[in-house]
Image (spheres, rainbow, N blue to C red):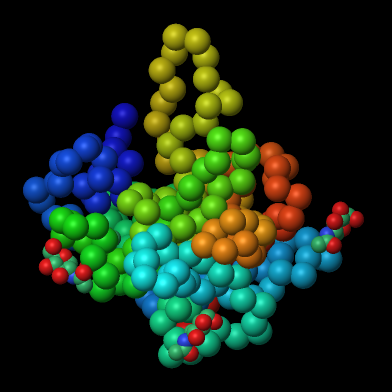
Length: 212
Ligand SMILES: *[C@@H]1O[C@H](CO)[C@@H](O)[C@H](O)[C@H]1NC(C)=O
Ligand SMILES: *[C@@H]1O[C@H](CO)[C@@H](O)[C@H](O)[C@H]1NC(C)=O
Ligand SMILES: *[C@@H]1O[C@H](CO)[C@@H](O)[C@H](O)[C@H]1NC(C)=O
Ligand SMILES: *[C@@H]1O[C@H](CO)[C@@H](O)[C@H](O)[C@H]1NC(C)=O
């Protein structure tokens, strides 16, 4: 099995081990992230901003703002993309999203910024997107600037006793905006692991990179 590169590169994979070699990462940004409901009757159309609860630098939470334009010059609307250049999906770089690019990622760590990761609940297929929680969720942008995620394995294909093969061809667009307890109870970016969202407030969205 190959290393899932973000956790490996962040030195967060093995307990207490910070990788000795600092991997050079490419960075793009800042850009804005637009969320647009997929259903024709969806009310979701706006941008994502990030915020902290007073006195708490992490986790950093994500807010859906029903705006027709991102607020230019407000860093809460500024997003970045880090990638190694070593992993692609259909020719598009795979890396991760982050905000706050000068903040310490963890201490000690040679990396800066707060990567986006998904936090899962034990009783739902709807995960909450959070920033700066220690991991990073694989992501990239296709030719239409739509954000995808990837996975190396698909457990629906598993056969007893036969180890599955690593794949670079598994891409997903399972973003949603849902009412969630995330800092406060509000509409936030979410990820549906599989099937119909367990949370009835979820609306499936396209997550789009938009220039600032
Ligand atoms: C959109 O229409 C579908 C099908 O009629 C319905 O199930 C859904 O609740 C509607 N969504 C919204 C956000 O109104
Ligand atoms: C930036 O945008 C956020 C989210 O809308 C808002 O809470 C904050 O007050 C804005 N900051 C400035 C300096 O305007
Ligand atoms: C980042 O971490 C370094 C090393 O631990 C520390 O010296 C520095 O004060 C930290 N910076 C911030 C902004 O927290
Ligand atoms: C993202 O990439 C930039 C540019 O290489 C780097 O300075 C930063 O530490 C990286 N952050 C993370 C979390 O990998």
